[in-house]
Image (cartoon, rainbow, N blue to C red):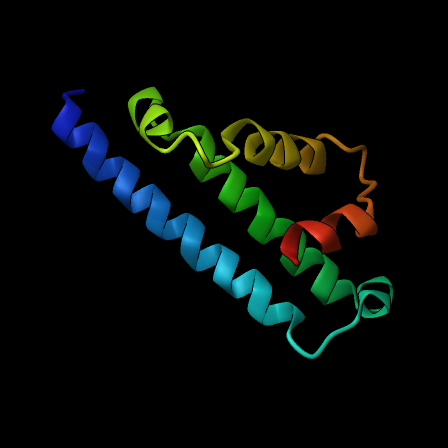
Length: 100
């Protein structure tokens, strides 16, 4: 895929990442950390949004990652991988801190 197309898809992925991050922050508005333990839908929603962000970031081209080296690409993908491969265990402290 040419550089122009790659940049186009990267822009779309950036937009998805930003939209889903904004949605995750909105879900926690007026919530406390303790609410995460009590509200299953909040847990599921935040996990899914963080997964989507990680999936999008994993597909960003190396060229774009280099141009935006201040973004913690590896950590974003790593968080997504830990959530998906966590044997159905999600550390709510890490999830909350990630969104905050």
